[in-house]
Image 1 (tube, rainbow, N blue to C red):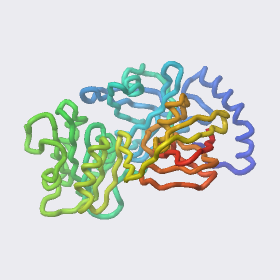
Image 2: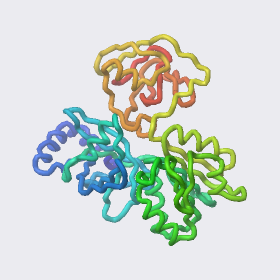
Image 3: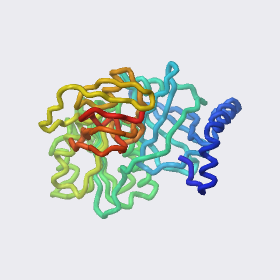
Image 4: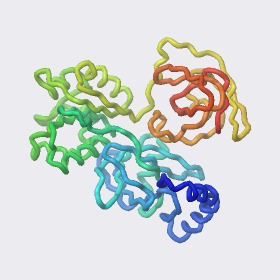
Length: 363
C-alpha cells in the first residue's frame, strides 16, 4: 500500500494510475523488481529445513513497508498463466537488511507450495504488505507457545525477536511434528533453551518414541500442558497448527489461560451450530454481469469456484482479506459465528461467508 497523499496529489495518482501500469510494464523489462507502486520481491536464497520443508529468502523492493514478528505476507506466483496468491507467515524477525524469510511445506495437492520450493533463484514475485496481529501480548505473565507442523513458522519469528532481546520474559515452546526429521530449526531451539533460563523447550514427535529429556510423546493432551505449566501456573497462550490441533489446544488451555491467540493454516471446519441452510440462491456478479446459482450455507469462495468463477484469494481462513468484496444487496451468513448480515453496501470475505438470500456482489 502506498503512503497517503495530499488530496490534489491523490487525485492525480488515480488519474495517472492506468498509465502507471503501462510504466510498470516497461520498467519490468529493465528490472522485474522495479515498479511505480507494487511491492515485489526477488528470491535470493533457498534452504532446506526438514523433510519437505524449505525456507525461502526474499529481497523486497522499496514499496514493501516491512513486517512485525508473527505477521503474514501474501506471495503470488504465476502457474500456467494463472496468478495464485497464498499467505505465509514470516519465519524470521525483522532485520536491518529488510529480507523476508518464509518457510514453505510441500503438500501433495498444494500447487503453489510445490512451485515455490522449486522456483529459480532470481525469480521476482508480487507480494503484499504484511498483515496480522499474532503477537506476544503486552500484558505481564509468561507465554506458552503451542505449535504443530508448519505452525512453527510464526513462532520462530516471535522467538527470534525475543532471542535478540535475550528472552526478557518466560516463554515455553511445545512443538509437535510427526517425526524428528520434520522439526524445523530444532538445533536453534535447543541452543536457546541451553543459553536462556527464560526459554523452555518441549519437542514432541507424535510418530516416534521419546529420545531426549525435553521430549514428550503423543498428540496434545492434558499431561503435556501440566508439564509445560506445572503447579497450576497460568500463561498467555499462542497456538498455531492445523484446525484440528488448534481446536484441541483451545479446548485444553482456554479454561485457565491468561489469554489465547490462535491461527490455523487449514480452513476451519464450519460449525453450523444446528443451523440448516437448504436450497440454492442466485448470486449476481455486478462487474461481469454474470448470475450463478449457489448452495445456501456453503462458503461463497468455494461455491463461486464450483461455478467457474475465480475470485482472488489468499489464506481461505478469513485472515488476509484478499477475497474481500462489496455486497450490494442481500443477506449473508458469517460461517465462523453464524451471524447474519443484512446490511447492504457492506464488505464481506468470500472464504468465511455464505449466501443467506439472493446476493449482488461487486465481482
